[in-house]
Image 1 (spheres, rainbow, N blue to C red):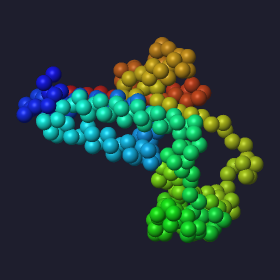
Image 2: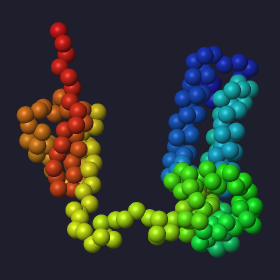
Image 3: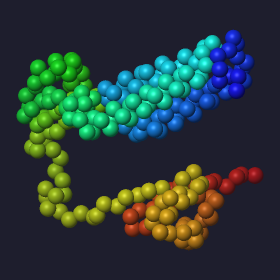
Image 4: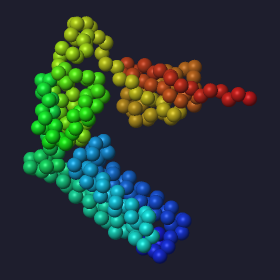
Length: 236
């Protein structure tokens, strides 16, 4: 465990072991913080990501620093992060501080310059974000807001929205969700339990193919299995 402590110098093996321990420790820390910190960087998420990156990076590049202090600091910050998230759900003031409301930028086709300045966004950037939503004219926008996560939510006026079957009063098929039941040649056992089926049922559904030869297969809400890709036979 010498690699764990401060050293005058580290061998190649010591550096590798430090990297492995640091990587696994960061994975566990990220798992503790939850999906939110991964999916979007809000104010609190940005601060914690920046801090954790600095703390764990130093002992991974400097042999004179031990891992113990960095790991203790990281655990403390993770606990503070989780506590801050929990408190923000209970205390309105903290919720406003950590997760401020969305800033309205466009209302009924009119640009709110004051809020645009408040969000510190140049108008060219706003137009670029509108183009990503296939909107070329501000006058077509019913409502647009800058979200705390750093994305622009855009809703166009109903006159410019695509016509749907509901508008035309047309009958439609119910939603049919498709999920992979065989992925990279492996059976998704959690999905099998979810739909209440076993291996024998799956083998029967993909006949005359064998399970070992199927790379990708899916099952829909009607329990219809479809094979998409199979292993090609090796040429002699």
